[in-house]
Amino acid sequence: MAPPLPAPLAAIGGLPSSAPLGVAGNGWFYEVLTKAGLSPSTAHTVDSLVLRPLEIVLVALVAVLVAHFGAKAVRAFLGRLAGPALHRSESRRADARLATMLALAANVWRFGVFLMAVFLILGLMGLDLAPLLASATVIGATIGFGAQSLVRDYLSGFLLAIEDQFAIGDTIAVNTVSGTVEDLTLRVTRLRAADGKIWYVPNGEIRVMANTSRGSARATVVLTVAPAQKDDLERARQVVTDAAGSVAARPEFAPHCPEPPQLVAVADADAASFRMQLTLKTRPPDRDHLEAELRRAAVQALADAGLWPAGPPDPGEPPAPPG
Figure 1 (spheres, rainbow, N blue to C red):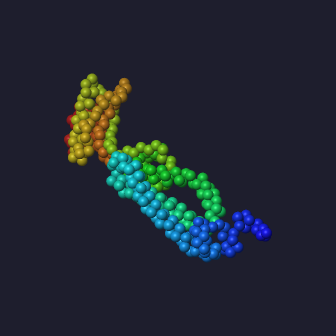
Figure 2 (figure 1 turned 90 degrees about the horizontal axis):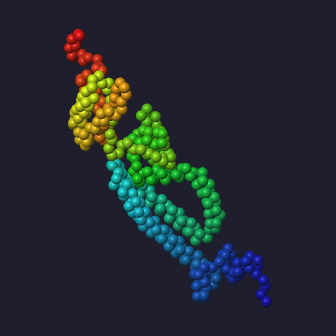
Figure 3 (figure 1 turned 135 degrees about the vertical axis):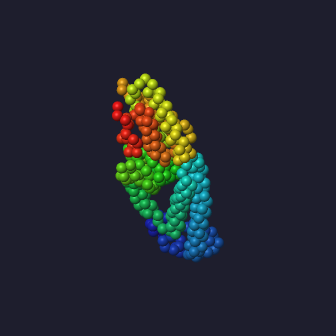
């Protein structure tokens, strides 16, 4: 009768007495070698020196192929997803920004594949990954819980760049802040307000945003006229319309004003005056300058027609006769 196995060997089902110490189990290649007539120690040696390196090389090769072709698939998928937004965009930097974001997504895919391959290779080398994975899970969960706002900022910045909702140089309004975009990263957007203040807006906080630099804009001028006679309303309407038409026909404005000026003769009124609203469609960069020119021309025309308080006399003009 054979003596009983020691407790450690009995727990693992028993190992041959000639098996190397520290080996907790045998693979299929080991079984094939032992059935072929090799001794257990020789089979373990051949298994460790031949099969394990081949498995490691195979895992590395598969990881390279998955990383390469998977990155191409990710780029193609995101490119098709962002295609409509790119076609609607008027930014000249849209192509470069899309290429940057696609490259970033491909790099993230490659990093994930290679990280998984490293863990598989360490497992094939016989390292116990359970404590390492448990520690990494706890640490990752802690960091992820504490940095969820940071992750949201980066994800929002990635989507903002893909959709090209705004670009550097655009004037936008975000929540209660408005200004010109000076810098845009994956985490934060930097705005320069009209008063010179610099605002840093985390991308994750951008919920509602208005972009006043895309498409077309409307220059709007409101004029208050105090009529003295019954026909002053019609005279003021004609004077302002003619003045706005002359401004819209200037060479610096005409190419970017596709529509004639629109005038609301009586936008508001009270017992002593009425307000006229003049609008003209133009490009966003020209809106402020066009508004100033429209206001100046309209006021000057109304003053010349006696419908607006006249300014100080021109030094070159002869003084008006008394009486």
